[in-house]
Length: 135
Image 1 (cartoon, rainbow, N blue to C red):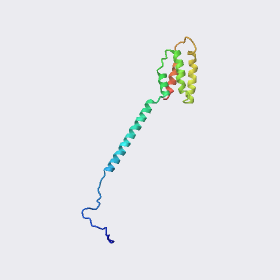
Image 2: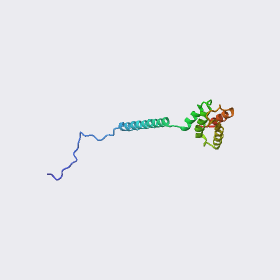
Image 3: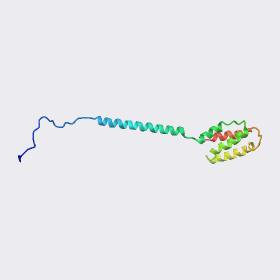
Image 4: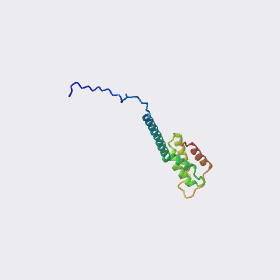
């Protein structure tokens, strides 16, 4: 074995490293990020839509029930107005006072076997109370 062996052998067929402008990895990462962002946005919108659709709003349902009452059946309407109207009585002190006044007027139409039709003043109070409600 030779003691002065040199490893600096000139190689003529291997070229130096050249920088190659390759952006496909960045395109892949950018596209993946945009797809993930789009999927997240769609999932969020679906979540919001399902929650909004499935949400039960008691105030809105009771408001619809109050507005759909047949005031010609005074006894049934008096009970229904008392029941559904209680949902809105705590909205403000004015609502509470109006609800108490209305229930006093409706007492005449409850707890009896036969009752007459609502008088004009009671109908006015009922319409005023329904008009006060904000849903």
